[in-house]
Image (tube, rainbow, N blue to C red; front, side, top):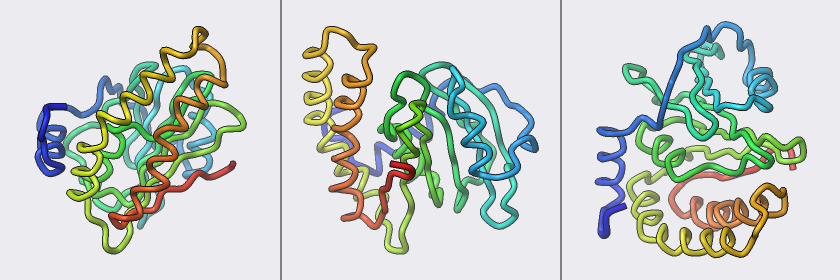
Length: 194
C-alpha cells in the first residue's frame, strides 16, 4: 500500500481496480442456507464465494476462484448482504486485509471466512449501527506495515510452513488485531465454532 494512503482512498482504489482475483460463477441455488453453504465450501481446495440476501435468505451470487483468492463480481449491490467464503489450506485463517476492505467499501452486513481446519471455525466481521468504514480502513492503513512486519517475522521463524502451528501463529496476529481494533469503529469481530 502506498505510504500515506487514507482509508477512504484505500477503499476507492480497491473498488476501482481490484475485485480480489479470479471468479467463475456457479449456480447459487445449490446453497440453501448460510450454514449449509459454509459446510459445503469449507473443505474445498479453491476459494468459493457465496452471497446471501438477508431479506429473502437466498443465495444470490456464487462462484469460485483459486487456492489463494476469489474475485467478487461487479454489478451486484452488496449493501446489507452476507458474504461468505472459504480459506483453503491446513489452517485457512482469519479475514484478510482485502476481505475487510471489501466488506467496508461495499457496506456488507456481514463478511465471513470459513477456515479449512475442522477445529478452526468461521471468522466474522459484522457492521454495527455506528460503523465508520473510513475510520477503520484508515487505522488499518496506518497499522498495516507493523502487522506485516510481525507476520513476516513469524513466517521467517518457521522453517516448515505446512504446520498448523505456523498457520495458527501467523493467523493469530490478525485475529488479535481485529479483536482489539474493529469495535472502536462500530464493527463486531467474532469467531464462531471455537
